[in-house]
Length: 248
Image (cartoon, rainbow, N blue to C red; front, side, top):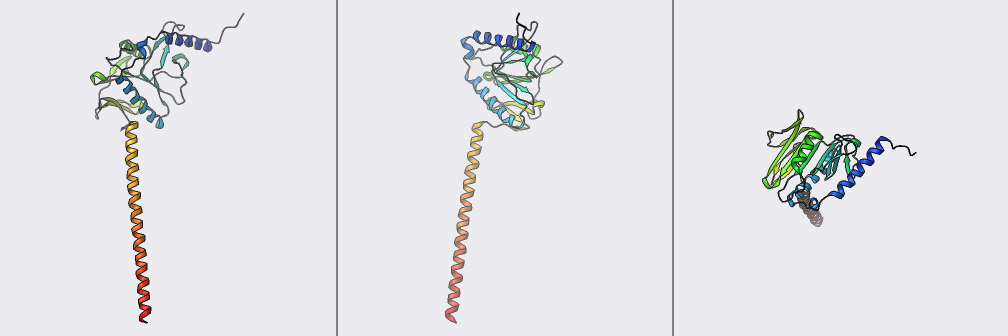
């Protein structure tokens, strides 16, 4: 008789099989993302890449299947946030899916971008899962078509809307993070500073490079003028010395 697998190995196998069933079940429209959703996703990923330089414990995942038990551990429930933030001091290993019973922590923040041009998910059902099943501490939802942004915080077992702070932004203090609409997109402030996007960083770099070139050119020209002045002074001194020698 073959010995039974250890509990963790058996659970891992169950979740892997569930992950494969989910992938096979995906309809074609799941892969059709509207441009606003794709743009906001890119902004979020780029922003959290910068955050992780200072806070490596803040880890961002993109379209990762989250699997979790409810009544029956052998039949995990599933949800796929547009983006998900996990806070943990060491890197989280999650390839095809984030299997909650096998992870050291759960999601801390989920972010979803709802566009009428792309019906890819049941976002109302997703919110219920985040609130009632997973108890995710923070939930951010953005409606690009309506320029509407909300952040919800888990309070007394249910989500409560986070009010704007004095700067007009929605704060998530545990992440040292604020979110607000800026030029029609959700942008992020980390430790009070707006996180730049790659294009903005490139413009700043080019401007700094051009300024440095101007300063170097100006310094080189000044050095050339100084050298020319010194040479002229030396020439005049030589002429003066020759003149004095002739008079003697």
